[in-house]
Image (cartoon, rainbow, N blue to C red; front, side, top):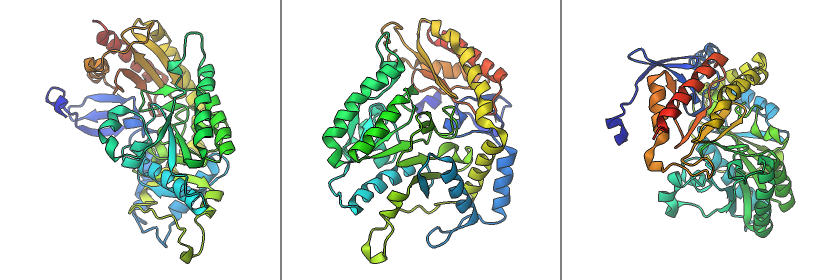
Length: 429
């Protein structure tokens, strides 16, 4: 907060497509989709119209004993597009809440099915799943978690398949395969006490946009089946086309037991999240009242009609505009315009999964020695971007692009040039 004594807050007046505009008329390309939520640009006319139309019909209603058309249509659409076997939707209002729902539902399932000893969860090193206490427990980024440790659940942490950690001559796939061996040992040892494994498929976003090979997902799905443990896919940040496929799990052609969705679900307009799960899990809670097996979890704004309308409009754009196919050109443009970054003496790696591209700044390229965090090298790139019409908010010393899908190849070229100039300044001494 004290940074704003020397780096003033920027009041934004309006948004238009890829652009944010402040009260002085300065414009900024939203290269990070306003924290990974915006898919089709600010003030998208089609999403605007859907919300306006819904506003004149129904703004909100209780979802206990009541329902409404937008939430029914959205549930049908999510079941249609998510990986095979996910058939039931539970709604909340943000990503952390979705993770809370999934972990409670997994635990409660095992209780209802006669497995009361299953009380623990397995996460990955360097993972992030949100800021509420249950979700925070399931993450592993010390910056967010360390101070609150006395309040958190005790979890079992497996090594990350993060390809940045690979040895010289080792591929991303090689590293993912042998890092899975440790996960397999943990599952074998703790299966009787574990409810679920939770992962961010393909990209650990808040963990510095670290990426890994899809073989890990395939092996993990097989192992969860073998050891009778749920698999929770946190696709809050990576879902809805970010990785080049509709859902990151599609890269390995797997279906989790729970998929957590939010952020891009409404195109970046309104807070809404969904947990989509299997009929097997649903049936464990479906019984007569006096059996007391119901899943007890509620949110005042569950299935909010305005949020559902925005989500339906967003999914309709995917359906009618051939978005994933059109994004291939943007993915290629991001790759081509940053290829030369790999030759920079202080860039350890340029990595990309679909529409997510990350540039990792280091003090020593050969040893991958990071800059001391206190030097805030990434902040210098951010400041340079603001002076040159670009919002490039870093993750520490990782500069990344995760733009809305309405960006053009020319705008990607401009972002790459701006980032390059900022990196030159940030690493000059």
